Image (cartoon, rainbow, N blue to C red):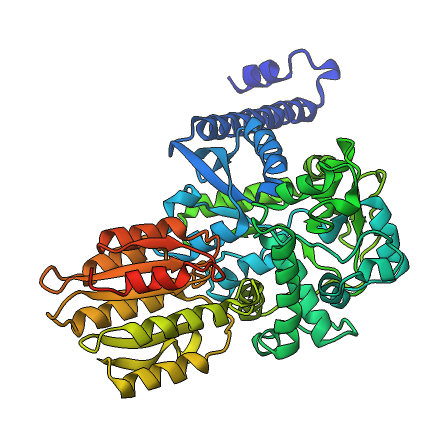
Length: 576
């Protein structure tokens, strides 16, 4: 038997002396089979994983993106490219929606709790115009990581090509703009003969705010240092004077202000003679001009001397979203920074960082617009300073007719108070920011009977008022209303008369929550109406109208220089 086994095991082996090679061959065959089996198993596991991912076992998810109008089209292009890759995040199949919302509107909505639905769905990713727009959220630790720019565009002045040449030759800086706007014949004096004085437009928005901050910073420090503008500096007399001068010039040039930068640029190019146009200069970004110039419009960029503000369009991943939304937002932002996607921003006129992050890629130059390297980038201001500068631009300091709004209003109120019956009770509150400790309002004269002593106190208080730099309307009106309800008197009509010259700028309270708080504070047994006088075009007008309506009051829109102001105040103060 043993001999038979030996013969069988060596059959076919030449010379019959070496069985080793047979064993080796068998081992190799087994090893190869094992390796091939492993690759097959690995490929099957990988394929099963890919199939599971493609199946999106957790279902579908939508990444909500809110973007400033300037960059929204480019973001939509990037979103379409990302969606085409069928992205899967945390086992969710993700698609993208992009909502176009002005940065200041989005900032207010995101700061509110709950958010204002009028600004669109609450996003997981927000792309505002500037990092300054996002600063309050960053300071409040409501972002998931440090925001990084997707694309940049320096803020310039959109002007006619001939005016750009003149301003450049005169080395005009940001701090010079108020003087050129306020001084008759200032442009003629520097060589723009026939232009008169500078007629700026200051449409609401992040770009105008960035330009005004640059003016304020240059007034404070002509050396254009990298220090951030502080709230105290923004409220200083030189800054208030400079920003108010620009605001007055803009109002004089266009009593009905352009709705946005696009409307202001339209006003520049629609006339035949640019010197006679109602607008000479508009704060815009390079990107906004790029699109206009490539369409054939005769415009140019003027870059005031000094530090350069920029719309840096950061990708802000909000921390209050769900885990999938946050992860998708981060993944989308990283995708948008890819080389292929950067082309979408370049085609729209934006600058984008190069791969090494040390330089920028720029669009091709066009007539009237080149893309020079930025010398000194402007420092981001303190959030409170930015708000203060914006407040000044539309404050009671502005000239309306032959006097300031504040002078016109206090004069009319003093007449009305003088005519109030002695049987009335009357008081005076003012509001701005931190007027009384942390409170944005101050009780100048407590509610009291209208006698000679109280009239004198009211008259003195009105005469001593000075312009401030904030409009915390919601918090102040709510406090005044609650006080009126608590101190209600059954003798005649109880009312709060609100006189305002600008929108609420305290983003801690949304319009919806403000109106809800007023409704909650009302008491049918103690009726108090709120009457509103709005002195300027006011983006809050719908909220103010609702406020008056739900309390049984009226709203009047009237200029402070209108002779009917006194009669309107007298009617609203009466027991009607």
